[in-house]
Image (cartoon, rainbow, N blue to C red; front, side, top):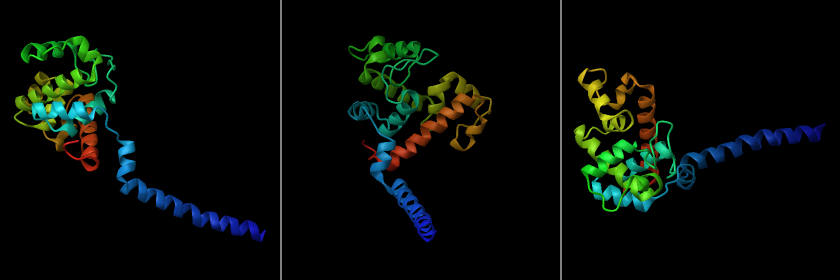
Length: 193
């Protein structure tokens, strides 16, 4: 009986100690954070972000939410590629900005093409919404016309603090998730990737 009590006491002391050490490692460990929040296609992201003047960590956060870095992803609504661009939007981008040798099929299957078009689109949305990152992200999900409507009708003021006022739950959740990953990546990775 005495041996059993000693074993139980050891387990009671050892288990919290192990949990404490694991907790400290989990919270403070950069390598563990990078394992939980990995980045893929960093060269493609870096190149497109530099070309279009967009924060590469924001591009990475959009990719994480849109496709989890899977270039062959197709949404139930028909969005394609690593940055989940609607085919009509991709056609519009390709007409507006001449991406040499890039086609809709490339956006569907080639990470570099999808990242290039998606990054250009983020830049364009930033421009359309006068540098308002949160409104640009909402527009990436719901469309710029819908976001302009919300802003013009004062349904939403375009700030992160009032995301709860976005009428579309999907868009509200989308912006929250992108910003969550953006903040995580900002803590774990150099801003130049």
